[in-house]
Length: 91
Image (cartoon, rainbow, N blue to C red; front, side, top):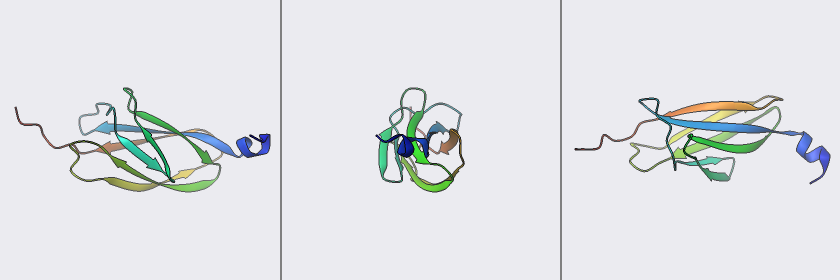
């Protein structure tokens, strides 16, 4: 990868939690067409262009509805926290 290409990109971490602030593992995160699953820490890490805005969509099993939005990326690494609403599991 050319140095100039990677120098114009930064890490964007999307952290997915449920309404009770618990990390959500296995959520599917689509950021500008890049698709990743969150790990046990609730994180999915993407490469994003500096000084840009990107669109995201988060889906997970037992979700009430997808969460869609945009993230503004500056010129340094960024973490964006997304809270999703999961359906209550009956006991």
